[in-house]
Figure (cartoon, rainbow, N blue to C red):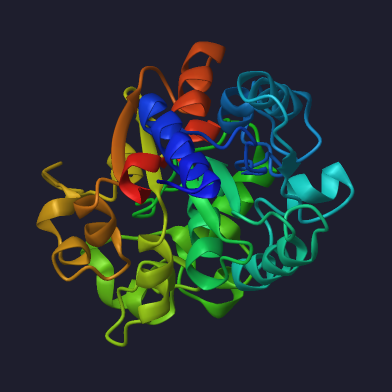
Length: 330
C-alpha cells in the first residue's frame, strides 16, 4: 500500500501531466536602449526616430515602455541612459567613446537594485544603434544576464555610409565631414559614435586595425574573445528585425549581419560568412538550437506601430517564454 506522502506525490504528478506545462507568470525586467539623437541637426534621422525618441526620457520611449507593461503586466522597464539630463543623453548618442559608454552601462545595470536582483535575468530591446550596443553589453558583461534579446533596424554588421545632411545645416556637414575625412583617426574613433560602427567592406584592413567598437564585438580580429561567443550563445532568443524600406541605415541588411558589396550590391547572407561558419560570436550555436530569428518590419527605418511591437513583446518577452515543461521533469 502506498503511503500518504507517496499518494500525494502521484496525485501531484498526475495533475501536472494533465496540464503538461506550468508557466512562470512573472515577466522579466526589460531594458531598452534607444537610437541615435540629433545633436548635429540631422533632420532625417530626427524625423524617423521621433515616434520612439532619441533620449531615455522621450515620450515615445515611455509609450513603448507602457505598451510592454500592457502586453506583459508587471514588467519593470528601464531605459538605458548615459546622462541623467535628457539633452546630455541625446548628445551622447552621437558624441562619445563607446568603450567608456558601454562600461558605464555595464556598471549601471549590475548595480541597479531591481535589475541585478532578478533571479532569472532580464530581457533587452534595442532600437537602431542601441541594438548593437546592447549586444556589446551581452558579449562584454551580461550581468545581469539577458534571456531574450530583440533589435529593430540595428547595424550589427556596421554602416558603410554616413548620413547626408540638410543643405543648409552647416554644423551637421562639419561633423559628417570630419568623420568622412578622418574615419580611422584616434580622434574620430574616440569621439564620434557612428564612426565606431562604420565598416567599409572595401577597406577591411583599416577597419580591423582602428575600429574602436564594432570590429571587437564582432570578433573579427585574429585573436578571438571566447567569452563573447559564449555569452551571446547563452541567450534563449535573439530576434533581429530589418526594415524593408530602410534607407537610413546603409546597408539595411546589416540588421541581419549580412555583407553587402558596395559596388555590385551583392548580398552575402550571414550563413555564408566566416562569422557564422567559424562561429566567432556564438550566432551559429544560437541558431542551431533554434534561438535566432530574422524578421522583417515593413516600412522605413524605425517606422514602428503598436501592432508590430505588441506581437514582438508577446512572442519574445512573455513569461510563457520561460515555460517549464513538467513532462520532461517527471
